[in-house]
Length: 243
Image 1 (tube, helix red, strand yellow):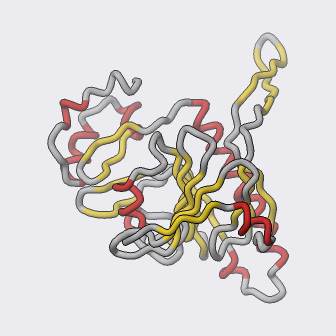
Image 2: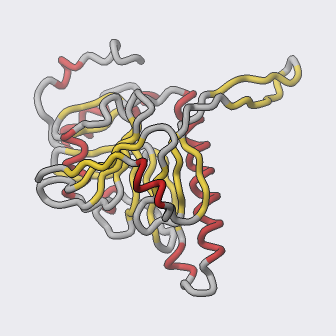
């Protein structure tokens, strides 16, 4: 199924979450995870094999560096307080009209199973979205109202929007990172540097022997710890959003 195959006329009216579930059950079983509901509007998620491979790689990298950061702080911090879990495309309900599936969701806590109602829980500390429009105001507003302290939105271009200071009227600040800029999400011991996407090469075994294939990577480079360098503040473009 492609974006062109998805006939939006089927769901031209706004749907509640219950109506959305009924509509999803009418779709082919293989396609049911490809949709989300944003303020009553059904949207098709980009869930190609290539993107899911990239998200799994991103999940592994985040989990790896977060565990390294946690290991360094064990002497001063109880383990359960510095434990992070990274989820791919979790289903989260934000309102009676919104049932969304962010690309990456990071929780801090005991590692209990993630449930749809838990997004507004304080344990959700960071969301990364990969969307067509990184300035999607509806999406951003919903995350702000849910109290997500760190919402990062990556669009088609190599430009990353960082939203912080959530309130009922929306995020009070937005930072725009471009290639070479670095940032650390609040309360998460990891530093992210934005870079040009670097192709990765993987080897797989087939009936014809070993084969190498290329995969695109997200434009992130990670290191453990917080970014406190003055160069970050001077290079990052900071914009303050009016309520």
